[in-house]
Image (cartoon, rainbow, N blue to C red; front, side, top):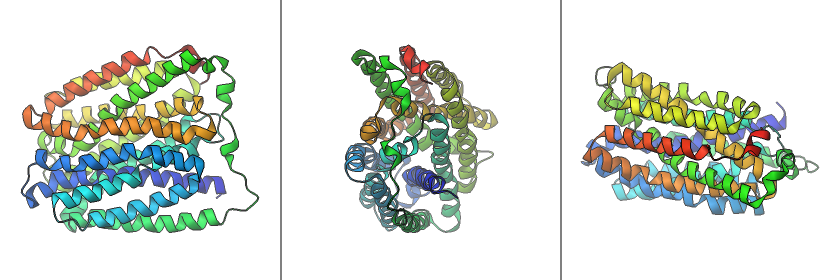
Length: 397
């Protein structure tokens, strides 16, 4: 395996672990701790909020350090730091302790997106498919969190769901350290290579057009983050309520969530191909419109119909993920690209942190029907925003 391919593999595994660690608690809270600690689901899940806030806010210093110091060094810190934090979470004995350890997980998880994605796109002219492949790994992390956590809850206890992945991540960090230490001194970083797409579209440098593109990126990032976090965090609980006949154990709920997330993850490959070869504006608008349709359809559904529609809306939710990253990669120069990704993700994850208390409030007040109505409205706003994208973004595809 070539060094570039091995590096890409490490980055993909990192994306898997990043989302995996951030969603272990979602299943643990829904299926075990609410009984073990005597708290309702709505009372328990807000303890995850500080972790998601850290997931967003800490992206800025992580991106700055990566650009000014070392992207490889920050990735090493990510693997080891998030693993140690998960081991600490496995020892939590109270809601306050779990909140503190989840916050620590969020601090290290924040490293991945501004650093890892900048490393994925550096030196490439077509970034849709690499970002899509990397995104599939991230979404498989989402899927596996529900599956493996449900399995561990039934077989070995919820603490194992935090402890074993923690040990694995530390081990991968050690391997990554050997990998970066073995680099030949004569190798130069591909980060020096500029994305020629920007140079092929001179109008991209016009200030008003850049402002418009960034405005669309940040607005859709904010709403997209809220939608992504709401669906991925709440899905185990949604299945517990709406699939009572076919998902009556933690393991089965985890399996159904895994199936939905796994199938949906591959939507990114389709979208990655489309944005590399067709209009980003049209692809983005179509994905957002499908989200609005399927969220609306999910209202009141139960049983097999709910499962099928859940697959459909997660296809659209996951399909949106690489689009904004492609836009950032096209208009951001390599020397400040980590910071550009950091700004995008600090907005996305900071807003997505509100999803946890939002789910708790909506679920306890009106139930999940109201949540799907809210998500449909958010997807509609994303659709309207994408229609304002300027033409040059399409021409650089």
